Image 1: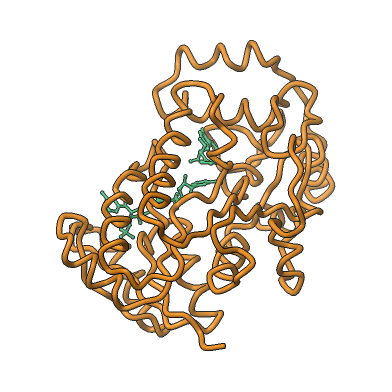
Image 2 (image 1 turned 60 degrees about the vertical axis):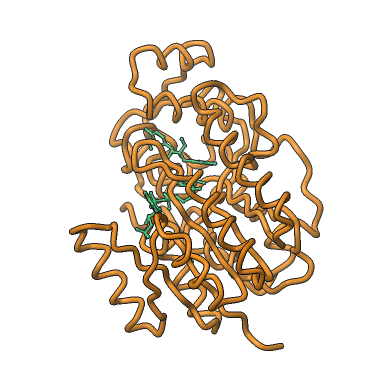
Length: 311
Ligand code: NDP
Ligand code: GO6
């Protein structure tokens, strides 16, 4: 089977850059949208050049120039979007509606992966405000994809290690606590954690797989289904230091929303669903929709290994 040509949109972002690298690593002819609007962000410039050095092709384009998006999309078979959806960085999930328009007009795209890579928005209709907007907007994009009848795959990637593992699921920090750790409720609710590089690897694996056409694929590595307590224990074993545990009830945790800014309110709602409600693990996933079953050849990163970088 011939390899697909892939366009990555949002390729200099946190997950996007990993998708570019995974696409190259899996042997796809890889194109990265290069936006003039990045202004004087030299980090993005360097990343784009590093992609080119690694074999990617840069395609100039802009979200304020429909033609440029259509032309970019026409170069490829597969479009992967990793546009930002995080409220304390930029937030541009609905920008993808322009991309959907371009893909529809171009008419050649065999697979589109919109920017999802988290909780399954189709399962989050009950989510708390204001975090709910994250899921509502992703559903707006899904509806546009459906109406345009664009072949797609939705990737539900669960919790990225950088935001949920390295900090032992503590908010507003990316490092493990030194002495005290806050446990959500009894700390036993199971969540699912992923190395971001693995998220990209699995996402790219799906793009030319007939089994994943028009499906939601869940990344649920069996050994990475862990409670917060299990995560803390892994860290204690690695660091050789026991942490003092404190617990916070669901009610007290949600009450924290009052004094926080908008981005943190979004985060608190999401953490609530993950660590109190158990929204990532309170449903069954069929083997045909679970990435580690579909791609057993991928040796995914276990979280004790992931945590070693924080030592
Ligand atoms: P980033 O914040 O890193 O941004 C990604 C890209 O979005 C940027 O690099 C940029 O593309 C593009 N972008 C931003 N603003 C604009 C704009 N105005 N116009 C056009 N493009 C724009 O995103 P993340 O990688 O953090 O998030 C990607 C996805 O992953 C989201 O859907 C998010 O919800 C999800 N996520 C999931 C997490 C989890 O734990 N499961 C954690 C974090 C995110 P360019 O490269 O062209 O500059
Ligand atoms: C990550 C976060 C971490 C918020 C998802 C506030 C979409 C998803 C698991 O951007 O709000 O400290 O699924 O203080 O579908 C943010 C969001 C988490 C990171 C959630 C996310 C996860 C977005 C914080 C904080 C570490």
